[in-house]
Length: 116
Image (cartoon, rainbow, N blue to C red; front, side, top):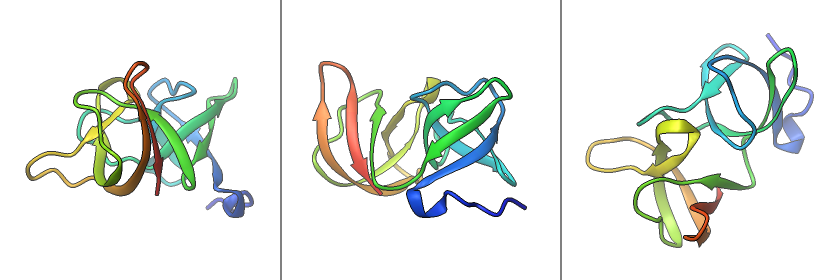
């Protein structure tokens, strides 16, 4: 088990799988491991860095700017969930997402600022 030395900073270093890319939303896949989210996956955080050994620096709290797909979220308390290609989207119907507060939306670049 990792001793999580960066926890207080809102960043964790996790082993990556599934070709993580800086800027992708990621999900937890096992102990100390993550990969990019797919459609309807639970969001853990955002890949801020990926090194040559595939370790991923993940921001998991505070204000995080994600790429979104589908309908643009609106400002306010929203349930968000993973989308294809490492993006996020609004949860619909019976889907269970992560509750966050949308602070701002850039519809030109499909970006959303969220605080968890």
